[in-house]
Length: 148
Picture (cartoon, rainbow, N blue to C red):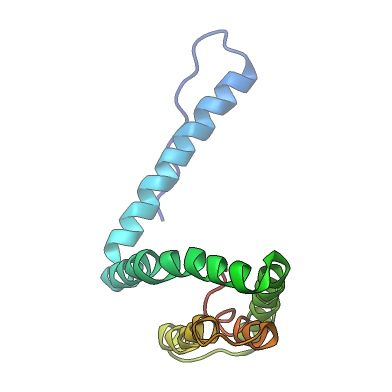
């Protein structure tokens, strides 16, 4: 790893805070450039990022408002709050499970965990009650900690 770039010289007589800010901005740009070089060096990561971009735009994005409208119209805002709390619980449980498991193929394990995402929209689309929706909501938690 290369040494950090030297701080830009502060003008003569500049206060110490101004000199520190100039150095921090220079270090941030150097870190950003290094991170971009590392990202470009790992072509397998490009595919992962591209898949997540498509997923978030084509699946998650439309699902959140459509499901929210459907649940609130059918069951009220409290029910939507309850099922989203179930997502939070699923995320915590999924995080705890992920701390214990060390799969050999992490991307594959994440993809398998993400399959559970379909449980909640399926429960809403089938017109099931709030308990069934709450039971289906934690399922994407382990695979999708970003929530909605």
